[in-house]
Image (tube, rainbow, N blue to C red; front, side, top):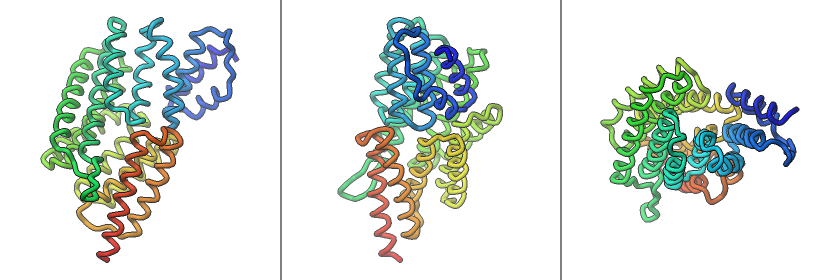
Length: 340
């Protein structure tokens, strides 16, 4: 099959959320150096997108960087489209600060080639990276002296405000766009705002009402356009909300729903997120958990660690977080055994 046709068919599979089919079509294809450069780059782009959704993040980033670097100087309008797939892989590798700097540099170099929708997505991703930095400040700062995570509320507050400001800007831009394709971006903004509020409520209980409102808004938008990735996230957010209210049975049910959707579509990164979520819920819980249940959670995080090492790299953010969670769960299990 002609390379251009092959890439176009793979892009169609990606749009239909058939990422396994897209990757199956492209995997093992030997590229002819004499082929049209635009066809080669569309091939790498389609393959990178499929790999990313299927959780092969490091391989996806390699494919997408090839296209972005090539197009930035020759075809900036295409480069800006690839940019957002690339920054998604940076987030999943935990490169939050680097992602912000990369986004700002790319935005300044693309300049006038950025459309209104591109500007919306740039604002959205500034918000996402700041949200991730807020999450890290709230949950994942390990204090070896006390043997537990200790939040940095000052830093969390700074990143929370920056995330909120960026999402608000993205929503304002969204009101000026008439194209239907931008509805997906608007739904993602509401998704990210809901998650931001849910995480902030971990250390600020008065944020729960805001989290409930935003979760309801996201649910309404999702019902109009049920994108698979956002379905998984919605169930994860419901689990987070249940855990905030100490309704851990409901949280587990919601996480299993999220895991089922992710597994059906081969979304390994999001499957792993569910295991990491449950470990966090146990660690944040005021009530005790049986040692066996804590050990089971630790085993799942160990599996997550293997995934991160294989598909992101051993010295990446989420691999380090998984190691910290395992350590914290071991402490929790010993305490639970002494209490039983």
